[in-house]
Length: 414
Image (cartoon, rainbow, N blue to C red):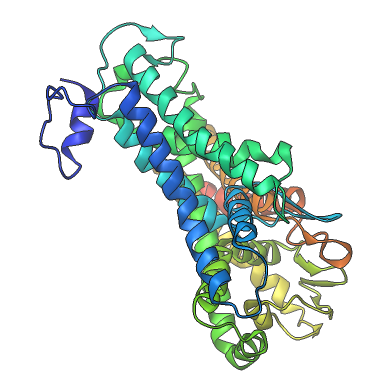
């Protein structure tokens, strides 16, 4: 009986739960390596197939199909966090929803690779049981092989990747998916994970992680809602840009998919606006509490929903701060709920502060990964200032969280 047997029982098609069939697809590193190859191929095809369909359907495209494959491989690396070179410019605006999709695929693939693998025997380097470590290593090696092939193809195309940035799509994305899968294993049987796998966090910080990530999810969701409302309100302008581009068939679907994949990026821009630093679409065209500056925007339909140039009323900043203070109070409430009701005020404050820090750091990290460049000159810096957003957002959330904790302590003393 192994932990991965239980994982396998939750998956369809488990005809041999004990792994005694003796087939080629039985437990072991070979099976895991093949699953790693399959995971990488599916991940690449999710991006490559739409690119090839759009390429073949575009009557204006005269380049050979090999260029389409190279561009598809480059876009797959970009979707995983890689940066691309376009002549003397750099494309580093990473679609966050694309990263999430690739992480989800890696999670499912690594989970399947661990199914029916023995968890008996000694631990390898204090991480995992040796059979499980071998299966995990083989899975990642198979995934990496596909990634290296994509790297070679992309390097010969018009958008070659920048080598240092490949750490994200080839290493961090599969490892993050693997970590999520191992988390489920650890919940089922904590003894499977070695001491070096599970980070040792102070109790206050460990309790704050969940509420802090929930706060980040709430802010991103709020940002997505604002973007959707803005698109609906500005639909005539958005439709006009769409008609100007005149995409057809698969091209229209790819354009829509690219904009949807970048929706969380736009949501972080909204959060930056709410916090105060604002964001920049092109050099000279930014949006903050003061107002919107004019500028020649890229031909992307969703950008037509941005506010028209002009100054905003002074009350906008007040409303934004009050909104984030309210989110901070919500985060503080969830954080305080993780400790005993009669815990000391110092403990509650520490958990609430840690939760706010987690929220701000998560938003800053999303902006750091998703922000960047779409070219050179006026397109060389797009998005929000990650460091400034993190610090300002933390301060505003902290006001609400501390306010809730103090109010909660006062109610207990009554």
